Image (tube, rainbow, N blue to C red; front, side):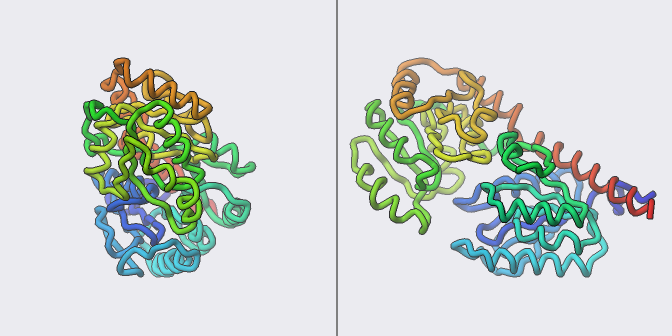
Length: 360
């Protein structure tokens, strides 16, 4: 029987297919790419060989193969398909890959053509078209789907999936003092992210709010009509999109991070980034939030602008155990835990594929 852990010295040879819209890891915006970068680095540190299909300005460890010289923005479904297709064409000519891990939905269409199993992580909100593609590919290929929260898995409408929560390297998130005297908001200025509720709650609580992020083109009208009129309120500071170091300072110096999402958030990386800095999250209990926020330890779940404001006032005047918050985040959402979970899944997928081949 073939070695289930790879044909090259016992180490797995993994092909990662990333979206083409943001470099891996991202310089500024890019949640999927942030997680993907952490996963690639963690696998490389454990001796596995990773071929990363991503934009040419990516810098993650491993062998980089790029069709696009630089990340293509804004997102376009045709460019996503080009990325997946060129990766698949390359993989069809190779026989040195044990497993493909796709992070872009377009790659699912090519799963039945490949000679090795595919893992597909569902990083995005769910659409019936994507669910149909997962069902079709799963019926014709050795495909394992991964949901990034239990709530997301429930919404996969019967599609079998493992659950692996995201993880990030704690060493990249220095613990902060929380003594900046402000609350933080980090994310797209989009209706579903709840930036207006964050602004209204901070104003009601008379707490300064520092924001990082910007509207995407699709959110321009929302920003113009609802966000911009509130940005001139006292205590509001907007930093635009920020790099990693600035992001860590923003979160670490805040006494709380606001996450009032108004949709079925599949995971919400901002939450664990804040927790790793020792800063508690105040969030609405939508999507994955109840799985990520540990009440009173890493944050608080509320249900309205008034409750956001009340919790802000309470936290501003009360001590909070930031060391305990960071320790809990490391234990539950450190990248080592995520890498180990994926390696277990990889090994099982390769072993199953090898056993099936042996039986033929």
